Structure formats: structure tokens, C-alpha cells
Amino acid sequence: MEKLPYPSKKVTRATAKQMLARLEQMYPDARTALEFHNPFELLVAVVLSAQCTDARVNLTTPALFARYPNAQALAAASLTDVEEIIKSCGFYRAKARNIVAAAQGMVEHHGGEVPAEREALEALPGVGRKTASVVLAVAFGQAAFAVDTHVFRVAHRLGITLGKTPEDVEHDVTALLPREKWGHAHHWLILHGRKICKAPIPLCGICPLADVCPTAPLVLKKKRAGR
Ligand code: SF4
Image (cartoon, rainbow, N blue to C red):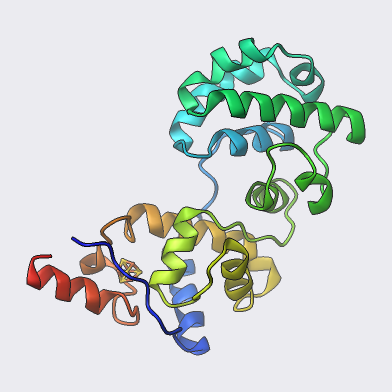
């Protein structure tokens, strides 16, 4: 099938809210698939998960955290040793550099702890808005909505946003929800993107949102035309 264009018009606010309510019903227990025991482990796991599956990260982090159980230990690590352990996660040189430098930043400025403020988190090497949002929401229970590739795609296909950047998408989705649901909504959209609204071809035929989703008719039309 050819690449699917995103809808050019947003659905109404009422429809968008209804879509999010249905996603909440579909994925009431949605949570991160990354395994971690504390904010330090979560932050490192999220950095490693860029362009890598959560399952692969979960296979890698036990050895990493056994050797470097906290920011102090990781800050003093040799880059080549870290690279060797995380090699299977992809982009391992940059990721090793970033997690060691982030650990050094935590030791230098935050007593070896992960800071619980967005500005301080984003000042750590390798920590962008998405990683900071995941850490704030998952580790600290704060109102934050992270936009990754699944969230971006699903929110566009549903016509909830026309945003060009992750920040635009964050703005549009969070405007539809009370703050206490922002962190959960991130997981609803990710799970839906992984299980049903897949890239490149969504499974609209089994999607409980198909009756309200503006992309579904397009997918069915293309299917009938064999494209
Ligand atoms: S109907 Fe299709 S495009 Fe719309 S959310 Fe469901 S799977 Fe995605």
C-alpha cells in the first residue's frame, strides 16, 4: 500500500475526546514496557530505547545496571566498557557517550540523583523533551505527555492534530485531557500504534475507532483498489 497521507482537517473536539476515552477503555492498564527500579534506571533505559525495541533494552540493562548501579558508578565508567555492554541497542557509541555524560551531570549538579524538573532534565546530555517527559510522568508521577513516533502517527491518523512537530502534537492532545491523564494517554497511543494502528499499514478492519477515524475510509478504499 502507498504511504498513507494524514487527514488535512482535524476532527471536532467532541470526537477527539470520544476517541481518547475509547483508547482509555481499550488500554486501561497501559504502562511502559521498559523494566526499571528507580528513576536512574528509567532514564538510562529511555535513552537506550531510541531506535531500539523495549524488549531489546530490557535484555541489555540488567548487565549494565549490575556493573553500574547508580549515577556515580556510571559517571566513572570507561566508554568502551559501556559500549560493549549496550552494543546490541544500536547507535551504541552515541548512547554510551550520552548516558555516561548524563550520569556525570547528575553527579556534578544533582548529588547523583535524577532531577525531577524538566529544565534540569533537558540540560543533561542526550535527554530531550521526549525522554524528560517519560521520566517526569513515569518516575515522578508528574503531568507530562511524551510524543514518540507511534504517538505522532496515531494522533495524526485520528485527526486529533495537524501538528508538524512533536511539541504541536503534545499541545493538541494535552488540551483535550485533564492533567492527571497526560502520562497515561502517552501509553494508550503507543499501545494502539504498536498493536493496531501500525506503520506502515493500520489494521482498520479490527480497530474499535474505525467508525470515527478519518483515516479508516481511505485505508479501506486503497485496499479495495489493491494499492
Ligand atoms: S481506524 Fe485505522 S487509522 Fe484509524 S486509528 Fe484505527 S487503525 Fe488507526
